[in-house]
Amino acid sequence: MNTPPSTAQPVQHRMRSTWHTATIVETRAETPHSVRMTLAVPTWPGSEPGSHLDVRLTAPDGYQASRSYSIASSSPWGHVILAIDELPDGEVSPFLVNEARPGDTLEVHGPLGSYFVWRPGQSDRPVQLIAGGSGVVPLYAMAVAHDLAGDSTPFQLLYSVRTPADAFFAAELTELAGPSFQVTHAYTRQAPTGWSGTVGRLTRDSLAASTIPASERPRIYVCGSTGFTETVAAWLLDLGHATTDILTERFGGL
Image (tube, rainbow, N blue to C red):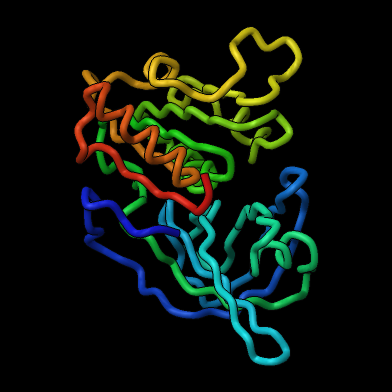
């Protein structure tokens, strides 16, 4: 999805990446402008929470276009879940969101992105997840893996989203919330009925109030648009977090 930051740490046991043929098993609306897609990929070797893959489309005239998408699952093998946000001027996402149907086949390359992963049991340090919009997808995969493993590592998610309707995995995140996983939302345009917090973009102060302090040395995963990710990473450094504790992944746009 992006070039790994200089602070990225290598994975000791990396799964082999290659091209696979995937069949769409199910599609369903995730938000008004996105779709959740389940793929059957018999040769898929599995992926770690936070990984991504490339999807390649080939037109009848032979023209090809590919884009990277975060993986919303970390199943051992055989199937992959994506959550794809439509970019109106994109070459791949409009087809996947509006035209792709169960039974269609796609080419996928992966798993990719070994620098931006979380593994159950790797550390007892708390984990802070920070997402903007569809950037929650790989962080959701981490939260699910955390829950399935029964890992007691403290997890927190700060999710910045325009409106409640734009939130990915809203019901699932609510169900995952519990003693070891806390979810905080920041609504930038419209909040749900009964919302007692403020509405607007995150600020350095609101970020500080909604995340694990630097004194607890959390591992931090930030994913969102380029502007969101760069701004949040700079604020985290200002708040005293170490560069080596911040992992980022970003997609195009502001």
